[in-house]
Length: 379
Image 1 (cartoon, rainbow, N blue to C red):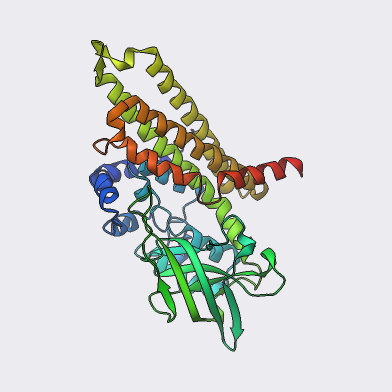
Image 2: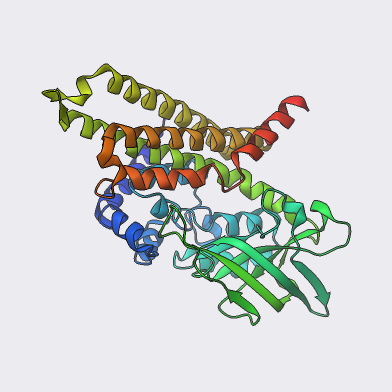
């Protein structure tokens, strides 16, 4: 990829930070399923959590390319820690594109300080890929909306200061009734946070259900127009999906580098296994797939930074789908290169393989991405 000097310096800063702060805790947070709260001030001071916040509100005014670069570098060591970079994306972007200036003045300077955690609540037990089937409702009551319902898979919801929550506000059904609201789980009454889900991978990155019982949300916390929330969420997802692709690329790169190092030192039949063509071909395929995925991710990032929304939409699905499929293939093959040792926790590739699987599922399953791509082709 052809990056500017400023971008390369940004990446080098990320690499130094990763070696100092992330690499030493990557295995431990997976083992204990512990949220690495000590990284919040580290990331905040580097502008990583609040990358999207414009300068006029006190932020670094980053872009999609920078978020992708940050997540790729960190994911080489830990995907759970990588997702903290740009964590406020799904909160900041709806405000920037659909919120009022009063809302931006109210929330963005707080987020810009780099100490606030935010989350997004879209999915429900019966509304995953079928977003229009959500049952959570917000009913106007004087100077507030009263929200009742349940959300599932709220990433970082148990540590979030603000949550961008989507709920139905009308009776028409489908996407046209969905509205976006800012809720404050640490201040508003009626919000119960469920148990931290015990996941196969991505440990250290908490996911929780939210239960909303007559939660009163002020009118000024409605983001955009009533019934326009789905549009806000889709724009945000188009800009966030490539970052999942970048995370997948970094994860795959880290697994390949570990496999190469192991293949050079592991000896069988009196020579390193890297000398066997079967291993060489596996490593070559890893490199091909990773480079192809990386090229697609950053081509998508360029479209996003240029404001080419029509092209971004389909490229975002392509980048997320292809890169996450690549990460699953590469990490699985990396475990194979390690043999029996790849199946134990003494080496990082088994964690990387477990982490890779979720990338094919969240931010829209890869089946949904293929639906988006095929609709674009047939339009």
